[in-house]
Amino acid sequence: MNYGWPDDHTLRAAFALAVRAPSVGNVQPWRFRISDHRVHLSLDSMRVPSATESGQRDAVVSCGAVLHHLRIALAASGWSAVVRRLPNAADPNYLASIDLVPHRPTMFDSALSAAIPRRQTDRRHFSSAPIPPGYLGLVNERAVAQGASIRQAVDGARTRLVAVLQDSAARAVGDPSYRLELADWSGRPTTLDGLPARKIPQRSAPEGSPTTITAGRSVASRVDADFAELLVLSTSADDRLAQLCAGEALSAVLLTATNVGLATCALTEPLAVPELRRRIRVGVLDGRGYPQAVLRIGWAQAGAVALPCTPRRALDDVLERYEATAC
Image (tube, rainbow, N blue to C red; front, side, top):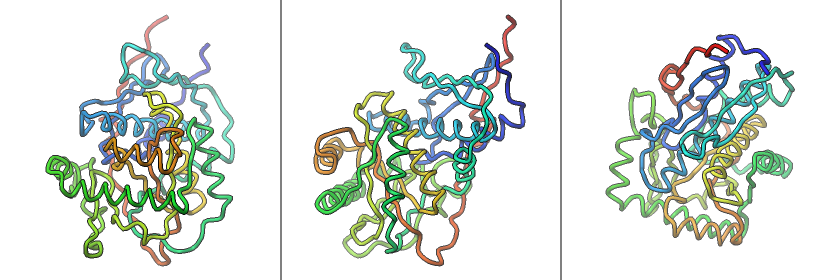
């Protein structure tokens, strides 16, 4: 049944918000196609920095985030997205098909949509102001609604997670291939993908504390000196569908946190090493669930300046259109 179709201005505005979604290394590994009054989302395999299992997982999670951003942007514009995930088993890079039906926007839709342009990955140290427990409960509810869950790392679990983050930083510093990939995707002065130089913290980490500056994520490894809460986002399975849903949950958590004024930073590089990922699964998740991202969440330091926006590729570079076929 044809429920109508958004006008071009509405569609472009929704896509412009959607592509503000975070992606590993800001590589933006997604492509959209519109045909026959349907939106199609695919993974752009040419933009996956690494062909490894972890590189594919990060890219699919990133595509899940852009899918959720698009759903929120459309809902706020009066269109509900009816999503079929992995609609073609023969094409694993075809991640979702999306039909649109008219929808009356809710306050929730409007609030999360308004949070999209305000959300920024904040790699700076956070303040000591405590997060109200209700806020942490809320982000977990939003993750659960997308098919994932959030575990707060406290006490011994936090100590074990910090140790994993520190080990990940040390390994990255000593891995030539990793550093080569890093150089290719980060510190870019003017390009529309990768991590711009102005987004990389210039302050050195304390002596003896390596700083992880990755293609899209950088944070001093001495996170134990930071006041951020550490959360692990996990799924019950670890297939492509679970990873896509993890990205949608990640988007929901980040936008929810932004909406209530919290700063956030998502980390995935510790999950690239199977041993470190196993340590998080056992030491933080008690062997239940598969970690898909680690999140730092907290209050920005008093007087902290607004972060510059990370650039995005032109909309026409990620969106294709085809005329509807005649019935």
